[in-house]
Structure formats: C-alpha cells, structure tokens
View (cartoon, chains in turn brown, green):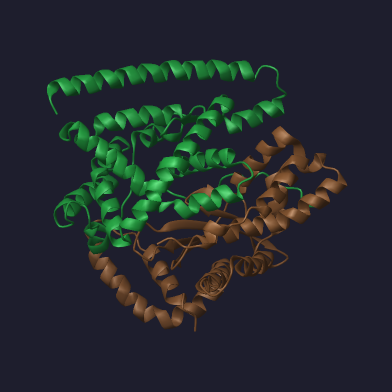
Length: 232
Length: 263
C-alpha cells in the first residue's frame, strides 16, 4: 500500500541489533530473513508503539511524493505543496519564536506582525529549496527516542540512489493538544533551529529587526533556479 | 621522498605550528579586550558565538567564497559533467580509503578499539578486494560501515575545548583545536611519507574537487536561503564537529531554551 514501507522495516530490524564484528554478515542474512517474516505484521505494530515515528513516516512519504513529480512540476508548485506539508506537520509558531529568541520581546506590534507574515514564506522556501536538491533518494526510519526534556526524536536516514553515504536526519517532535508537530530538523547533527537562531541574531545585531525582516523578504525574491534543477 | 624533503616538510610544519601559536595568542588577547565593556547577557551571547575576530574571519570568508565561485565550483561542476556518477563514486571511495590509516590511529588514541578494528579491516579489505579502495566491499559485503576520525576530534574526546572560531584561507571553517589536529594528522598519515610531493598535491586537489562536487546543490540551497551565510556556516561547522566528536548525530538531551509563544 505504501512504497516506502518496506524500507522502514529494514531500518527497524537492523537498528535493533547490536552486532559484533565477526557476526555481522551472518546477522545481516538473519535480519533479511526476519524482515521477510516481520513485514506483514510490522505496519500494524508500528502504529501502536510509535505514534511519533508513524507521524514522521507519513510526513516523509508526502515529501517523497512531492519530489517524485519533480520533472512534471515547477519549483513554485512544489513549494506550494511543501507549504501545506509544513503547516500541517510543523509547529511554525514555536519555530518562529525560538529562532528570533530574546528579540521578540523588544519588537513592536507592527514588527511582530510583519515578521510572522514573512516567516512562514521563508521557512517554506528553506525546506523546499533544501529538499529540492534531492533526487531519487529514499528514507529509512531508524528509531524513536524520548528526550529527557519531554520531546521525542524520530531518527531517519536518507539513502542515496548511487549508494553513497546516507544522510542522518533527526526530527524533534512535540505534542501540541494531542497532535504531533515537528519543531526541529537535525541534519547530520546540525540543528536547523539553532542555525536560524544564530543567523537571525547576527543580522539583528547588525541591522536591527527591521533589517532582518528586509533580509527575509530579499531571500524570497531570490529565485531558486539552480536548486530546482537536478545534478547528477 | 628523500630525507631532505622530509626535513624540509618538517621545518615547514614546525614554522606553521609556531604561526598558529602566535595567532591563537593574539586571538585570545583580542577576545579578552572585546568582552570588557559588555553586559553579562551580551558577554554570554558572545561566548556562545565565540567568534572574537569575526571581522577578520568574514573578510577571509569572502576571499574563500570568491575563490570558490571562480575556481572550485566551476571545476567541481566540470568534473561532474565529465566523470559519470559511477566513476566519481569510485574516486571518492579510493580517496576515503587513503584516509583510513589516520582514522585508525585516532580511533586508537580515543580508546575506540572496536572502531579501530573496523577501520583496519576496511583498509585491508578495500585496498585489496576493493581495487585500491575504489569499491567499498567492506561496507557492502561485510557491513563494516565507513567512519572518519581526525586528531581534532581526538583532542575533543580528550576534553580540549574548541577555542575561538577561525576562518582559514583555502581550508575554510576551523578553530585552534582543529588547526592543531590538521597538522598532527599530516604527521600521522603514513602516505605523507610514502607519497612524493606531486602525488601528495594531486591527492589534496582531487579530494578538494571530489568533496566539492558532492555538495553543489546543497551549498547553493543553503546560500540562497541564508539571511547570513557566514553565520550559518559557522554554526554548521561547530555543530557538525560536535556531532563528529560524539560519534553520533543525535541532539537529544541538549538543552533547548524555552520559548514564550503566547505574546
């Protein structure tokens, strides 16, 4: 029913095993055998045990779906689809407040309003442009970990079509009124939230909040032509 | 490599190390001077950013970017146009394989004996069965996944702090700890002594082109969506290095400042 499912389950089986050096190849065979047996059952079990993982899996499948139609859609169309995805799956308010940090309190009402306006467009552009540089990649679910602070971390891997080094992507997920929402995406250990916070602080320190808002608008006007075209 | 050449290389490296020590001292002094007239809050923020010579770093960053735009990136794009993906993958693997001894030694220095074993086995398998490292048979056949260690990471594991952020000409983002690591890795690397000057330079150039060609779209997307590309790169480098030192990318348990989302 879902094309990305089998990959997901390989990841689960493999990551649950701590393999010693000598037993590794034997274990890989065993894991493949287990995987075949476990496949028909895994889908149901997964949803019950790991709602955060299921949430990310659904979100990831949607992103893969958007990228699959890359040749028949324009970047603007994909960006619009990514916007829906972000509004559904991300808690934009938390993200926008976190990245602006202490400067939020110092902002006037007019500044707050124009910041909120441009931020949604900006964050959509960021993720759309980033995802658009991918082609043919698939993702694999690894595990879900509880953070001592209460959030959950859903760990995934993006697999390269040519068999290159996979990319580790972790999602920080938080419950808002019983609904899971992403608040941070950590690529290879690099937090998008922290990166934006540092960048925003740097711009505000030099040019003030109005300077940041102007810069966010400028980013939106810069076309993402090169990112829309795939290399390979 | 003749004895004389080794001597010359060593003299050069010692001179380089001296320059680093001087630079680090100047930077530390500059850092002290700049924190004098600050509120505690601003001082804490500066400590988190830890970039006391930001103006100099930014200037170097601009030079590096110009070099990248006019030289590295066009070469990387050309390389991608001429060599098909299969070939690029083989070249990248072979270059990574040459880095395996340095990873092995650093694994040992970090007390990571299982990882040292993996690195050793990978080097032996890939250098022979994998055709001089072109094919990663160790990962594909035996599940021995690739990992990279360097002396900068080793120093981090030993508890040494990174120090102030540094933007090196050509080499890019760094810090005093990683500069020391970079030099130590050259000494540690058996290929430094095995290869002649021309081969060493070719290896360096090939690594630069191969690595750059992997990140053409990603870097472009990052640059186009950054409000401050320099600050973004600084954070990227710092968090990536920390993840490398932890040998893991998970940020769980890292304190996240609370946000007041009700205005």
